Image (tube, rainbow, N blue to C red; front, side, top):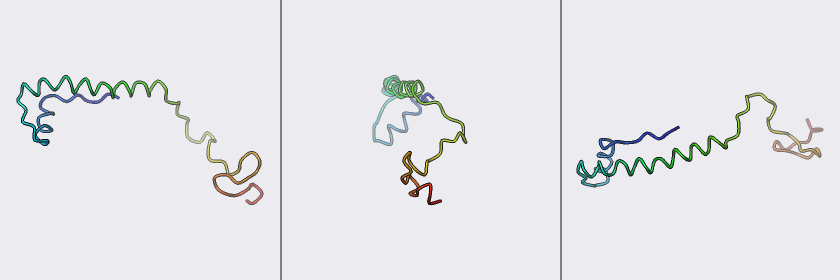
Length: 83
């Protein structure tokens, strides 16, 4: 998923909000810098997509266990023989 790149018209109200008085030429100079910085977000998304684990379908039996291998209480706090 890529981040949408702003153009000068998108950056003008942001500059005004921060009290910056930028000309059209100033905005035109800033647009490539902003686009370049947003490219880092695209790269992070690419790297995550390469490494993220595959999603398992719902209902595959991987829910929480009530006890560990030795029969001691698990996440729900009771033993198998206390059901």
